[in-house]
Amino acid sequence: MTRTLTVVATGPLALIEDLGRPGNAHLGVPPSGALDRPSLRLANRLVGNPEDAAGIECVLGGLAVRASASCTIAVTGPSVPVEVADRVVDSHAPIHVRADEVVRLGSPHAGVRNYLAVSGGIVAAPQLGSRSTDVLSGIGPAPLAVGNVLPIGDPVGLPTGEDAVPPPSPRDYLTIPVILGPRDEWFANAGSQLAAAVWSVSPESNRVGLRLLGDPLRRAPEFEGQELTSEGVLTGAVQVPANGRPVIFLADHPTTGGYPVIGVVPAAHLAELAQARPGTRVRLRG
Amino acid sequence: MRLRRCGVDAVLVEVESLGEVAAARAALAGLPGLIELVPAARTVLASFEPGSAGLRQVQEVLDRADLSSPPAAGSAEVVLPVVYEGLDIELVAETAGLSVEEAVALHSGAVYTVAFCGFAPGFAYLTGLPEPLCQPRLETPRTRVPAGSVGVAGEFTGIYPRASPGGWRLVARLADDAAALFDATREPAALLSPGDRVRFEVAS
Image (cartoon, rainbow over all chains, first blue to last red; front, side):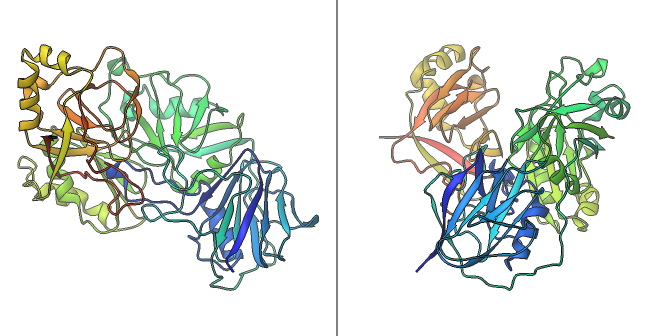
């Protein structure tokens, strides 16, 4: 009999994600995949999966799933209460779940996204080599809904429990490095303008991009009113629309953009941005 | 040509024309560690696996390439059956100073090349549009353009893979038996890829 997880509750948004489908941008397809990649990789390692197995990315808690058979699960991301059949258990550790038990996530104490991995991984039909949900272009499985029955694969490895894995602690004030370019010359003293600005994360942020609120960045006089021909953009690109308020592109970003990119956030800092709640203050250090 | 810094593991190559974009894209394809190679109107973005040698070879490869001679078009030619009943076909003909029949003959008689993709999965910007059909976008974009609509805008023609807002002047739609431009469950998912040649054929 196929082992499954049945979705009992989804919280605000729960998606199937793996490490995405990079390499398709020339076809107009975003890379997609887990926004906090280290957390998905850790969850998979904890349950004995390859790091690229598909798990559940859960926004602001509230996820509950019932296992049809015994399995091992792990929940990672920011610190979050986890219960199995009403027993309080640890996040960031392998948890044994028996048949018919329900795993329930509370609300993360800080941060946004938790990851649930299950031994064997979630089975979904790959599209362009990935099972990730891409909210921009609608590729991949639909967002989870109550009653969904998710098949899970056969376990392939042993859970690699560690004595203690501390959860990341999302802060309410981030300083994020940015490598200036490719279009920093469109802005007057790009480096010092960035250094002087403190932004806050807009509630309109999503998997496409982290939108920032605050004082607009000023264009250099010779670029005021200019238009840029669309060009390829990277995950982590800080694009500045005409209103001067930056958008940092996350995994479901479009493949080309028509506004200048002042700088690019190195990949190692994208997970921190993925966990930034609305209102989090952000400095960009050029 | 100018190389622009784009994060740690990528570079944006800026050139002068669509022809140079095609030449630069062909020159960079196959570099070690290449993850994404994204041609656009005047640029090619090349991103690499962290620490791969490919990024360091970009300048040398481009210095050796002759950007003034784009690569010969591939042998692959995609023929798209279409019905020339676009909402703006009369506007397009009038702007071109042609009858509708002449505008249709001009659009369906040309051979196009996929310059780049973007906007939505499977949306290809096709070059080779005859000059009289190179026309501005609509003054007010439509909030919903049906999937399969064929439009013109500036120097490009293109087909909307799925319903979306859009401001291109619509000349035709894909015939009912035309293959989907994008189907994530199909291999390959996208019907059109940069470098492909495309012709429109009046569906009977």
